[in-house]
Length: 452
Image (cartoon, rainbow, N blue to C red; front, side, top):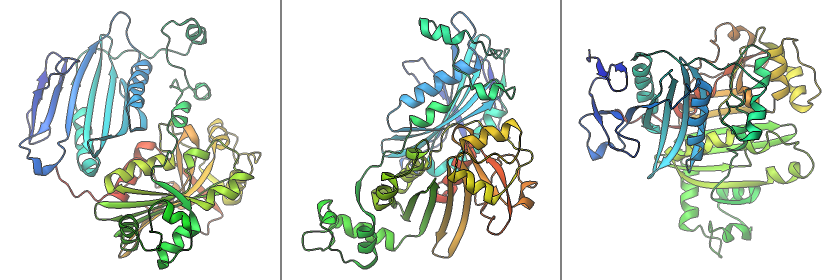
C-alpha cells in the first residue's frame, strides 16, 4: 500500500496512487505540488497529473460560494473550454470542464475547498481517453486527503448583495433564489448554460442532399461542390471520400433524436478508429430557451452541420450539442408522472405539474427538451438513454416505475440503458447529474484503450 505523503506548506496529507511520484513545478503562481505517474515515455501520450495549491485568504475569509464562482470564471475564460459540472464537495465545490490543448481533449476536475485561512485547490488533468480509469483514481486521493484547519462557513443569503453589486464593491455571488425556497443556499448557475451554446465548426448543407449522397454516391446538389465534398463532375474529393468512408464503415454510431416543442433536432456521430464524423442539426443548447415555431420548424431540420473531428474531440462537441452544463439536480418523491402529461408539458408550457411539491414545480417549469440517445457498433445495439432536459436543474432519466426504487439519486453506471419506458403508462424521473451524464457520454463514445 502506498505511503501517505504530508505537504506541510499546504497543510495536506494524502496518499498518492501506486506508481505516482510527488514533485513541484515552478509557475507564475509559485510552486504547486504535482503528482504524476512515473516512469512515463513519449509513446504513452499525455501524462495525467494532480496538482495541489493553496492561496492564502487576504483579509476576510473567502466563502465556498465565492471560491467556486471565481474558479468557474477562470474555467469559462479559457479558449475552447466547456464547463461540464459544478457539484457540492465537503468544504467547497467540485468543478469539471473540457479543454482542447495541443491536439488533446483534456478533462480538468478541480476540487475547490474554502478554509478559514486559505483556499485549497486540487486539480486533476487527464486526457479524455484515460478519464474513465484515472478520474476515479484521483478522486479517491482527494476524498482521502487529511486537511488541516477549519472549513470556511457558508454565507447566508443577504438581499443587500444586489445593492453591493450596483455600487461596485466585492459582493458574494448571486444565489439561486428558487433553491432558497427549498432551504438550499447555492449559487445561481442559470447563466452558465447560455454562455456555452453549441457553435458548430465545419460546413452546413442541405440535409437531404447530403444524406442521399452519402447513401448512394450520386448528387445533383451544387452545394456539395461549393463546400468541397465533390468536384464539379460530382466525384468525391479527398474530403468527401473520407466522410463517406467513416460514415459507411463506422465501428460505433451514436445517434440522438430530440424535440423542443414541435422542433425536431438530430445528432449522429460516426466513429471509425480515431476518426469521427458528426452530422447534426442545431443543438438543444441553442433552442432550449426559444419558442421553436414558424421559421424554425421549416429551416432548422432541413440544414445539417458536417464536422470532421478526431474521436477525442467529439466528446466536447456532443456535450455542447446536448447542453451539458453545471446544474443543481433535485431528487423527486414521488418520482412518477404519466407519459401523456409529460409529453403534453413538452408541447405546452401551461400543462400543470403532476404533484404540488415545490421540487416538482421547479423542474416542471424548466422542462425544455426530450432526447433519446442510442449507441450501436458492428455487433448491434449497445446502450441507450431517454431523458428530459430541465435547464439549470439538469437532466432526468425516464425510467420504468419498477426501476425508480432501484436507481440511486443520479447514480448512473456507464452502459446503463435508462431507455425503458416504451409501453408504461407512467414513467419515473430520476436525476442525472451533469458529472454522471458526462461520464456516461465518455464511456459510450470512447473506449478506454489507454492505461495510466
